[in-house]
Image (cartoon, rainbow, N blue to C red):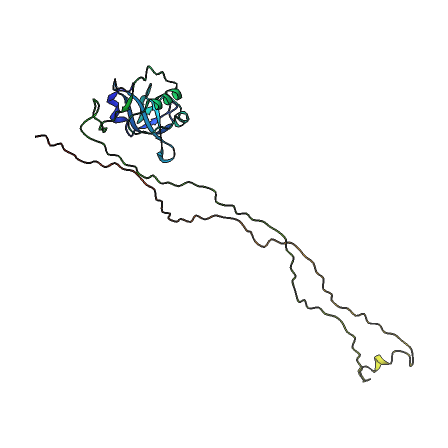
Length: 247
């Protein structure tokens, strides 16, 4: 059971759902104005804790470094969005009651922030005032920006190659009769008719093609880091000192 003694420790503590999943950090605690009993807590949820939602403290218990509530994380994050500034109006209370299916008698009456050091004095506050301010939490997320693909297609080009070729040509040679060849010349008849045939050869170009691998092409990515400036307005509280002169 959560009581007023736990308020100081609750601020900034982690809130977990009934299954043990972290919901977010507790920002403020709301008390019943009549009894001073802690009734609600506002929890920072969403990316970098940019959203704030309310969760009942009924059946909440301390566990480890945080507070376990009796609801699922997704259910809490979908609760009605209510401005966590000052007292909650009756209409906002009704919206929360209906969403969490709470009885009005158990949560009857107005309730306000009961954190120690709150701006208005009360039985659960001290003499200090808490000054708060918004702080930027900037992060990054990966989003697809484009696609790159490899596509292979066939083109035809003409190649010119010079190939040396040889051929045989007929050349007529005459040699006189000498002592060295007279015997060869006198072997045949004195007079005769004869034919001599010589086969001529030449080289012709033969073209053949084969497909061979020449290179491998792949897509790869590289990470390039650049600085981007982010500008956003933030709110912060200022505290002024004012003294009444009572003489």
